[in-house]
Structure formats: C-alpha cells, structure tokens
Image (cartoon, rainbow, N blue to C red; front, top):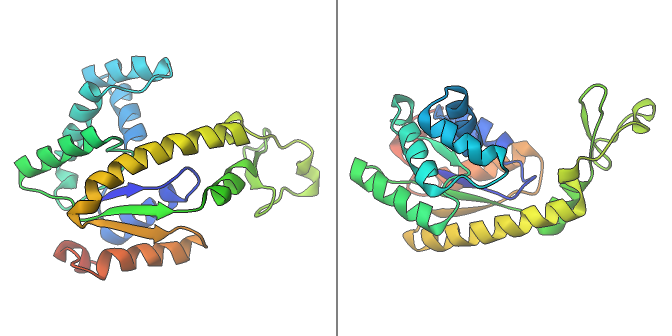
Length: 218
C-alpha cells in the first residue's frame, strides 16, 4: 500500500500502527535515504549530496533506491510506502516495476484533513530547548514553569506550513489522479484521536476485497 497525508496528519503514527497490525515494513523515503547514506552506498552518497544542498533527490536516484528496498525479503509479504511515489511519473514507474515482478498495489490510502486544522496542529507546536519535549498551545500546553522558554520551530510558522501544504497538495493531486481510475484509492478522515483514525483506516482496508495476507493476521 501507499500512504498519503498532509504534514501533521498523524501519518507516521498510523503507519506504525499498521506495521504492528499487519507485520509489514514501513518504507519512508527519508529513512531510506538516510540508511543508504549511512551505509555509504554509491546511490546513498549521490543522494546525500542533493540532501545536503537542500535539493530534491532526482528520479534517477530515487527510483533505483526505492526498487532496491522493495526487492528486499521483508517486502515479499507486503509493505507500506510513505513519501514515494511523489509524482505521476514515479507512480507510473512504480506500477511498471511491480508489474514486472508480478505484484500490484492493493491500496492507496489518503488521510484527509482540512488545511485550517493542519495549520492549527503545526503552528501550535512548541519545543522545550532544555528537555526536547514537544508541546501544543491548545492540545498539550506546556506547564507554567516551562511555558516561558518554549520556542516555535521555523518549520512550524504559518508561512512555512502553508508552503509545505501547497507542495503537498500539488504532489497529492498528481498521485490521486493516477490511482483513482484504478479503483484502489481509499480516503480516510484524519480528524480525531489516533485510535479512532486507525479504525477508519483498517475498515477502509478490510471492508472491500482485502488481500488474504492481511485478513489472516489478527
């Protein structure tokens, strides 16, 4: 499956729960790049030069790294892709690679949240520079003795979050347009406690034509 969601949608939390439920690996492109860089592989070192420069890693590096990871033994019973594919072209290449392997995606899950809620979730976050603890001004306020020293990350300002949201929508629209005609797209309401959202996701996965490998797991 492919997991899609805007920044602050709880995608990472839900991916961890899906890993626990179905026993399949969560493949994040960011972690994949960092692992390849740490291993000092040729692809990893090349990707690292783009990452250090703050540039997007080009497809001629992303695609072989992703396919190399998907070919590993732990992916034979399934996988959760997070951050890949990002473009219509990447989705086409993934589809071609899977077809050559005799595989196919079962689901593309889209966690949906209104932009105003995403802004509220992200811009309200505050970090304690002393302990590293993360708070939220509305949902988890810092205690009085900490409130005076918490700071907002530059990535959490309204301007920064709005930019990331615009980028996400452009990418998501491209991916959705590719997968929607294939009948495997599932949209899930991401508003609510994590335990409620995961139940919506599981229902979306298992209520229609669920793969046997998933429904056989507890």
